[in-house]
Image (cartoon, rainbow, N blue to C red):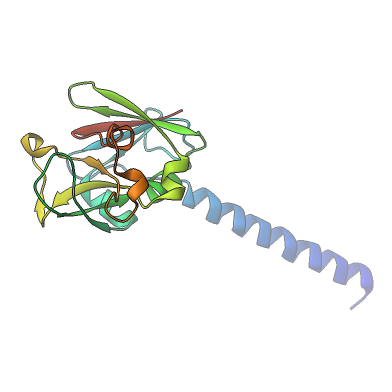
Length: 174
């Protein structure tokens, strides 16, 4: 085969590889709509949505990102509690978040701002189970931001506890 033909063939293979990579990246940027009742909206500075400039999740979609566990005491419960939920770092990665802080919004419209750096520094989760049970609204559910304060003494203070939003319905990436 001549050099021009080899070069053309190489360019064609390179173009096909870039096209395949582009398709893989594009498919990685999609988020299906929730099949069940949505329990969380992620809005703001995100690249991946499933309609109306938001990423809406039902519980199975959150579980599919990965389930993390934290066993810790809280200022609002007696003794250590076992929590299950999604890592906030993983959730923000899933929606392609590109902000430096989030605003967690509760069902009663209470809002708290949290630096995204917290989620790289500590394994913070957005929990939906406490001691094996789905959390109900009257029990700080359906979603509660949990910091592993027993594992990191620097988190056992009022400033850090102010970030423990419960009854979370929306995360706004800023």
